[in-house]
Length: 213
Image (cartoon, rainbow, N blue to C red; front, side, top):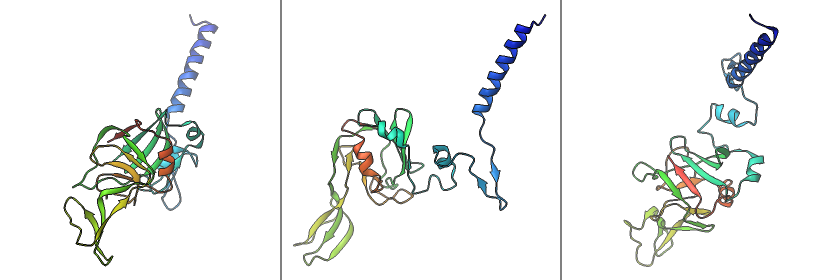
């Protein structure tokens, strides 16, 4: 026999199950009159940012201001997605910053795996890649590699700028400011936007974990 108390319990459990089901349900996708998808998430939210048609190719940066204030070199980590060409400043399992990056080309790929910051230098120049000028100061090689290219007599080599440098390997791979194309285009390093890298730099320390995959 079903008593009033049992009915109340059944109703209570059913309501909880319904609420849980609704909480996990994705928003319904709607369309404009011309057939474009309407982003179902609140503007400014991370879900909204990731659902935009331009993601992940966008140059835009998403930031969680409240969590950013709580993030420091003691509780941060970095995740790099080579497939998405995006970098993520993390606090635990939470995304603090989602920003565009540019990784290595096929012939000089960015290594994958877990790394730790070995060195931090604000003003850094490459001792391998850069430009070669002749004795008259004329540019003769704008994409020089000192392991293969020679400097003409009286000329000079000028290393490429890698400001806000965070070294990840002993053979010269790091994360730094550089031209960010929406495809792999570097010599194995991970380039980031000039507006974002000083902030990322300030939130990590020697020993901070980088996961690249």
